[in-house]
Image (cartoon, rainbow, N blue to C red; front, side):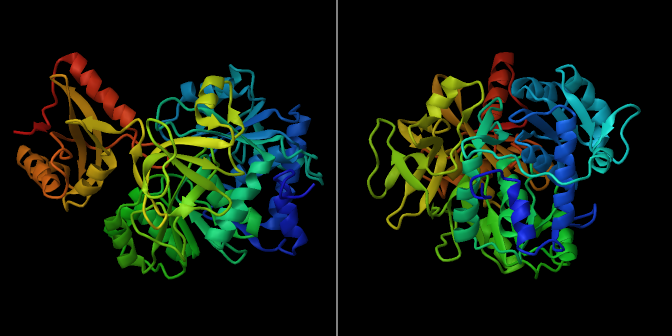
Length: 528
């Protein structure tokens, strides 16, 4: 068994064997944890879970914020061949969602954030799950992680898992609807770590990672757990919401060398009052994913930090990024080129592969592809085509082999007989000085498809019919005649996934509900 293809918890052992026991593995407000101490906690947690009756391949739900407790629970479950299942935990996560995850995954145990324990534990117990609090002292008669680790301290060899055994589950972010359980195998770990983290980003044991995306998402799990453990680096763990000023303050205080974030934050941080006051000099590399990074946001961040952001695209189904810009091949506004070891092809709507430059739906092939969606065979068949994963993203490949995002294949709009990519309009709107964010969908008006833009302003009180008219004119001057938004609605916020992707299905549902109600929105301005 090796850390490359066997039990993923053996990555920690590999770092001890390399003499990194005293090196920091985790940094943050909850203190510093070295690799030797992480190894001790991992083994103790594995012994504790085994004592609680958790067996190989049984699921352990992680309802946790980014913290040392997440690492302890995740690696402890992996150590005994059980399957860690991180699930989204936000301020909006309630008992109903947690009950779904527990029932859907047939979880045997769950580790729950201490300050959410009283709220969420009853829903878990209803499904027969053994519930553990992450806190320093559990409720009366309950189980808590620190006590379990102390009581079960001792050595524990990693379970002799096979490369084809399940390693972890992740739930999809839900940009297209209900979450799906994504099953990843032990063999999926090495390709993203070796190819993307190693060959594209050049991450080493000297790096300190800071990810604004949480560990419960594939992007965050790779950034903060898989990649650092692979190389022997350290991770900065920030609990709570990554507000721009907090991220900037953490960069100055904890001195990360690599920042993993998303376009929304790269856009917001330069606008923060802290932007000009914080020292960002420790950073050597900045990475973005989740949605396309607009050129003006890329430029704004470079003006602040002096660093060029490497934008890429990935998915939960492929575990991490499979197409990316690199320090040696960078084209702002694009998603870069295929990561080494991965292959990409574009397929036309009518079928047939696009050769050379052109547009089509992106399919990707690589060693980190998921095994299946849990209990959703039809959905699995719809996206896995032999060794190829159908991403659902529409891309254009230019003459130099760079890929440019045009939108979700099912988000494309046909207006006046011509195809329109919502992302093109959103990018132009976001270049307007008064616009913070924009989301574009198609709406039916008199049996015709019309373009509607939902716009978030920097200053909400500026929303007016006159501004809506000026925004339409702004788009007319920069886009083709069939691409400007016919309708503009000012909103307080856009519905987004945990990683910042716009949930256009939610915008469409909102519009459908308004139409069914027979009433328009007072803040909606129509093209005159």
